[in-house]
Image (cartoon, rainbow, N blue to C red; front, side, top):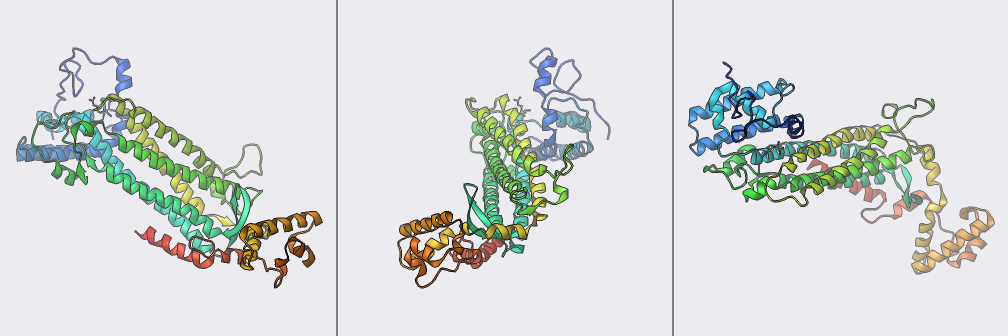
Length: 471
Ligand code: ARG
């Protein structure tokens, strides 16, 4: 294919610009440095080509292009895609990806390229490209979240009968199962995945065919365009369509909340893998050493997961601040949206795999867990529950157990080793008919309502988790 000279509208400069007929000279270098978005938006090249090919079909449908012209433009865009896949954007100096694609198209098909932008504006074009990109990114994110959920679920299934303390206020509260703790995180990520799906439904509204602000000046079939590009509906209002970035804010929120969940999981694991807790060991591949202290094995991946979620929160704040006070329609401020979008997605795509692998490779330290769950203070609630079963109102039972614990402190003895008279001193029902039998296992099995720690309840939970993962 013979190469044509770029035939931009810009006068004199020799470079291809999508505008410039009205102005004598190109932009100042300082403005160009600020304005040029190619370094960021070149990632949209595949979507820009795809959207342009669909637009060619729409123009053909509207009889703006004949079949031969449409065929040449689509084939030319395909060659442009090939060049971009081979790195044509790397050393390009165009203003943005839309300008670059059009310049390359001129090189491929000559002046016919000038017909592509009929009825279209970069305003509806960039909104379409970035929504297309986001739809793919959301699908990939959902898959990565799902994989992490799979790792949590497998650990839960493998450690159904491993007991651990559950915490409130970061103080030992009651015994539970390691599986129950793992699944607690599973459900948070399930909500993230649901939010991703719901957000995608709103992303999949097609802006293309809205023109710059007031709509396309040619009778293009936008429903056909939507179907071709995989959108579920067309945006109802052209003014809204070119200025709407609610979906970026929503994606940033969904991503940030996912980051918060990763951070909370990371924090649990940092604590549980510390010398003080020692419930799990992080495999060597997921720790790093200290340059000074030879003994250190630091949980850097988890710390970075905790830290990176702070940055996500910054992106969410940025997009909301960007939109607040913006006049309706397209404003160049909106060019910032892509940095935000890419940062949120890239950050999560770094955090999710390493978190999944860390979970999959966790080593549980059963001796440490056995020692921790042997702490009889975890069973105080069970003692109160037993007095309830023996007829006492719960509030009185709570006080009776409190008295018993105080007696234990006074005698310097675990309550399980106190003489029966001491128990009777706390409350006579403790001996009727006999001292309650206490164990961590009995405690978890007593939590038999759905959503609790008992074996059948956790097995039912695992079955539910399997079912939502299969969806
Ligand atoms: N690079 C621009 C962006 O990301 C493309 C849209 C430009 N539109 C315009 N009217 N200058 O938003």
